[in-house]
Length: 238
Image (cartoon, rainbow, N blue to C red; front, top):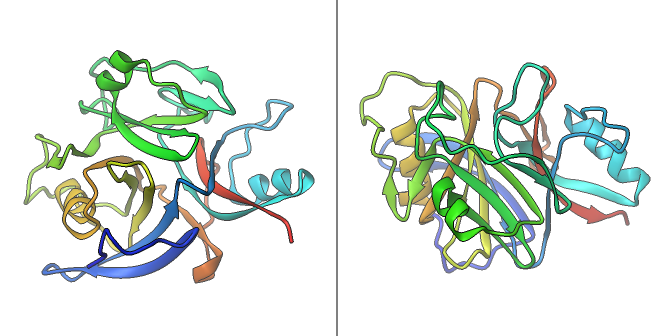
């Protein structure tokens, strides 16, 4: 079990098994108060990046590099974000609060909002009410954990199981933990991992089936079909 009081490294990636289930998860924990968390979708020419190597190449031209990344929310066939998307303070897609098909529309859904010195997972209607200002943001759904409670639609014995990925944040916004399951799990199990093992009060589902992780600390670089939004931590080149 990860202790919430243990100081986190800039990007600390590791594998852990959830008790008593024995299911495996890989996580990358970020100190959001100090690290440069960004979302990525397209380059300056408007070309969708779609992969971790494309993000790396773009950053290298500007003197940066990725220390971690994963896919960060659902997208349409043209790889455009389904819901709210803000990159470098510029909103490129609007917030969606209406019920709809698929996991995104399984309300409540939420937003990962990155601001100066913090990162927060915020339920979408609350985000809209508070008119939260984000430097980077991506909307996805469903919420996995909402103020310490699992999403009300999750079934403990649900038989829909996939490799899933998502993010959880601490109440003070300093801890952001990005997780991908090592095996197929249902929503209830995935949510419990954030709440009970990581001790995080709010967590957001990013995706399943296409879930991917870039974690050089673990020699992991998942590949596959092009992705939509990507989230990562940027460091300067040595």
